[in-house]
Structures are given as structure tokens and as C-alpha cells.
Length: 174
Image (cartoon, rainbow, N blue to C red; front, top):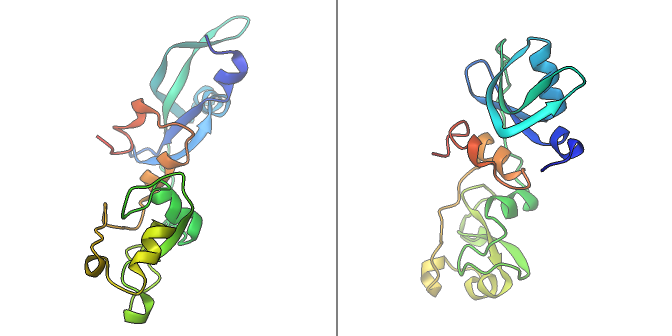
């Protein structure tokens, strides 16, 4: 059984009025929003309750804000840390993990390649050195996945310590 401290600190997915993922908060904030009638409970954490002297509140897993919140266009920052995170700290050529990693230009800069989400991938030192200033297919390498710009929803899921399975439908992962 989880302690009260762990329950209060659990992550809760916050949906906009339109059911779009908005952000993640903790149980304390989610219950406050519900009690202030600013949000509704969409999904509870199975069999978990937060007990007070006079009440027991189901622990929320997903809540929905009542009033629509306009969110400005969100852009993922192109940097080394976010490329590693997008590629799950895995070499995109050989699949190696837990080895020294670098960033590789799929189309090398000397051949017109750009610094962009679709041209930068995580590579182990060995694959990066093997590829050099060539295209992957010229040296017998193949990308495991096509690099693309991360979407806010996927980024939100990746920042969690462990993916919350019951959130998958709300994060459009099913």
C-alpha cells in the first residue's frame, strides 16, 4: 500500500476542456482543482483513496479543466539532451545503449545537411566514426527509426519517471 506522502506526490494528467493533454500536476493540486469546482475527475487510480477526518477522496489519475485554456504554440527546443531523450538514449544505427553517445548528422553538414530534428540522431561513437562524412547507406548503415520533431504529447509522456498506462488513450498512444 502506498503511503500518504507517495499518494500526494503521484502524477495526475490534466486535460483541457477539449480533452487535450495540458500538463501534469500532483494529487494535491488535482484534488484542490476538483474541490474548487475548476476541474472534474475523469479517471481514478484504482482502489486508492486519500482519507481526511471526515471524508475519503478517490485519488485522481486524470482530471479535466472546466474552462478552456488557450495554450500558445509549443516548440520542442533542439538541443543535445532533447535529441538523446527523443531517441531513448539509443544509437539509431546499431541499437546500442549504455555506451558513449554522440549526435550525428544523417546528411553531413559538408554535404548540405542541416541542424534540424529530421537530420540529427543519436549515434554511438563507433557508428558515428564509421559513417564519417558519408550518407548512412554508403557505408552499410541503416536508421532504425526516421528522425522527426517530437510532439508535445510524446514529450510529456517521456518526462515521466515511468509511463502511466491508463493515460495512453488521452495521450493518443493507443
